Every structure is written in structure tokens, then in C-alpha cells.
Image (cartoon, rainbow, N blue to C red):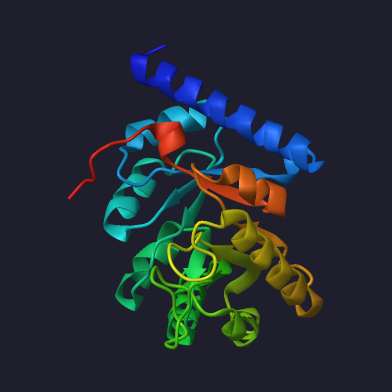
Length: 239
């Protein structure tokens, strides 16, 4: 194996051990949690190695990096997740390769995604990004809608052609009542997911937890964890 493949295989094995242990501690089956490897800032060659190591879900947060990478890896059996804040002028490009957009947080974005999904004749999975640090503006520091806005936005997604409401996503907040309380934040997201599923039973996906707090997310009940540095290492940002 190449040095990079050896490195990624070892890192992936460690992350797998962490998820397995977290599932066991929470009384959950390992297959209840899907690993999404966040490949932002890393080259297509790393994505290709990860696919060969069995990774099936990858995530990106910047269209300008993601679009050429997804094109270079179009032959691989991957599900692409877009997890960054998404401007409407990037929607057409993102809909061209993303299978799931996890960062849906406003009605204008829903309308743009629906229009482009219909144009591309694709069904696009959507998660409502929840901001547990939302202030008076109703939006979070890193995007997202306040918990009180979930119902309306979810209904809009569910009723829009070309879109499929898959569930909820959050990022552990750095400010507000949940700062430094990752598990409490993720438990709150699970409560919100329970509420959502009363109206939308198929919206079962709960995306929470990253390299530093995946155990807390698994303990809370997350169905998907988004792990970047623990798999790929720390690397200077591109651009």
C-alpha cells in the first residue's frame, strides 16, 4: 500500500473502533450509525483511496472545491453530502453532484433547490439545519434555523417537487446555552427529530457529531456522524 493509503486505512480503523465502542456503550447496533467522511480541502486522490477502503458517504462544504472533485470521482459508488452554508447562486452546480444537502435553512434556498432538482430530473435529499445557538435573528452563527422554524421549513421541503425531506442536522454550538455541552445539544436535536417525525415519519436522518464529539452524538441517537480530521488528518486549507 502507498503511504497515504496506509495512513488513511489506520485512521479509518481508529474511527471505526470509536463508533463501534460508542454504539456498544449506548446499547445500539453498529449499523445504526453511518460514517460520512468530510473530504473538504483534500484531493480527489484521497476520496478515491477512501472509496477503495469501503467508505460510501463523503461530504463537502464548498462548491468550488467539491464540483471538480465530484466530477473526478464520478465513477465511484459514493453518496455525496453538501454540508456547508449554501448560497443560491451555487445551487445549480451543487444539485449536479450532491445526493443530500444537509444545510437547508431558509425558504429561498428550498425554492432554488427544488427548481434545479426538477430541471436536472433528480430527487435531492434535504436536511433542515438546526441552529441551537440561534439568537433574535432566528439564525445561528454557522447557519441554521432556530428550532421554532423547523416545522414550517420541513413542510416546505416536503411539499417541493424534486426534494425529499430526510431529517435534521446540527453543529454543536460554540455560544449560547449549549456551548461546551455537546451531548445536551445532540439530545435536544433528537427531541426535535421526534417532533418532526410525527408529521413526517420518513424523515429519520439525524446528522450530528464530528471528529471531537462523535461519541456524544452516538450516545444521543444520531444516525449519521460527519468526521473529517480524525480520518484525513490536519491539513492547511486550500485557497
